[in-house]
Image 1 (cartoon, rainbow, N blue to C red):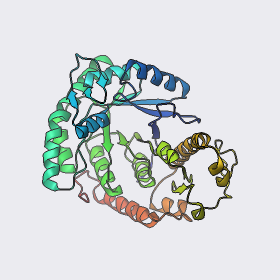
Image 2: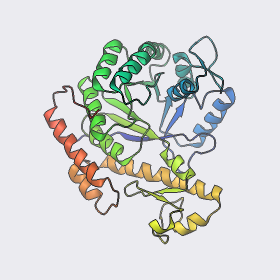
Image 3: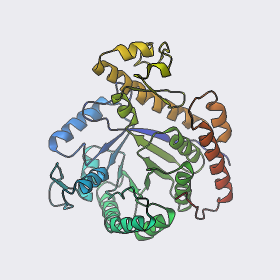
Length: 364
């Protein structure tokens, strides 16, 4: 299959509260449920957006905050006539709030409000969870699409897929079919590379040409996104907070393969290794580790962000497939390299076999 020009994007998530990387951030994801939860938070977020050098801003809906509220058992309402409110004791969030925040932030795209499904193993429990959340996710998708069409049709709309498998996805899609939206947002959770590819292939068969992979910037996920973006989609984006969380735990992300180095595990890496990136400024790992906590975290935040962004840009220019990954990752000491390459080979085979867009079998 011939590859076309890719539009592969890494959207920096979790950058609020003064954690915006001291590097050129061109793609940013903010949450209506967190970054816009109060008037003061809105002003801080606007200042952060102004500081960045954005080419694309996506507003996520706040489904994560709804999931957290569900786990804590706090009071939840979804009343558009009341102000957006998220505190430790209560939550009020509706599709209208998401659309209004996307407009106020001058976003390029937004994600419809959703009620995330929980991580559950039992098949029967999964089905009950899916059906329970479907009662919210279908009307919210419809309402968000209606408001967007009326108020801000220029903003791309991604509909979140809260489904454990393709059968459930088909059920969800059948209930929202006909609404006006741009593409799907896919929370990958613990999906395998093949699972992600199967969902994306089915979306492509339905005529979808833009998708966002929610919540992961791992090498396997980026590899699948790069493979699919070059062959099936006009736009594939992904987001993650791993750049920040890793830095908070004194972890250095290797630009070559996104493997990690815990700075405290002195015997597991070369302390004399020098990083040439701008934030590290030619410091050795030993020197970075010796810095004061605050300074060290600032450097690691910027370095880790650039490591992920750099790999995304490199994969966006390349024709990523099994052959490319095998050559590109040669010499990597990641323990899952062979698994990544094997999965990519299986995806290539799956794409050939299932080219017509039929259903695909997932790994559970």
